[in-house]
Length: 395
Image (cartoon, rainbow, N blue to C red):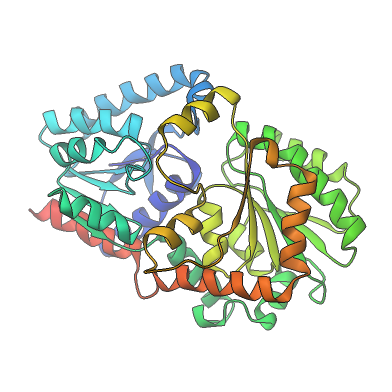
């Protein structure tokens, strides 16, 4: 059984399900996810909720409670040999307690951000789970020092990237070449000879609502200041038609003459020269693909205020966190992060100007992104996690 609660985790769950089915053709998979997991052969008990934050989560409470009830019933009736919990800690740690009572073996895949806040969860996880499969090098050290069986397996984003570039006849080492960008611009219906700015307003409704005005203003300003640029917007696959329509309406209202909408973030980022991205997994995707970026984020005032009190990291973007925690003695450039009121037109365009118009700054940022990519080369997160599932099932 595979349980996840948000778009990025659902993607990782689909990759894991595909790897398990390829290695074990007769396997039966059940879980909580979305259409990608269903397509990978998972019998869905419920769809993902996608809520985030203290204020934002209130509206999803009933749905989450009903999903929890269905999962608990399935643990008793389906009796999985292994339960895989992907991120989504407030929900999944409760599921882990139920599974432990039933004697079901548990693999936690994608660690909660215990390094940022609520560090006491390390001890709790050690008491609940049989093994941890984590995505970042510094997480393995954190859990191992606490006596929790743990392995850094790499990041599934790298699995998706490798599969995508190979499908176009390239290798991971070709990422960032102008020839590759031109190929994927053409693939996305864009002019292969013109540069591309990618806008990614997030995968959750509250993110999109707060960041769309920022993205629309950036789109309008790009048309004025950099008329040669095309603007591409990969819409998160978990979003429904109404959300996609809202994104289209807002950005089309900016009047940019070369605006493109897609449903494939990796292929679109492979076409990109720069990006403005909501803080989240997409920032790591862009880093692995060598796309210089500006990171933006807005929360409700209450959620942001409480977060400032609780969170124990200097940065919010995964790129900067990895540079801080996993690249030895690195004091180089960090990606620009614009939060709350700073995430407005002038600051966004100022940061973009440093990427587009300052060659030395752009090269320095590309060098930093390459340091991040090196951390994940040679690893296949989905394959290794599938092997860990098999080990638990056999044990």
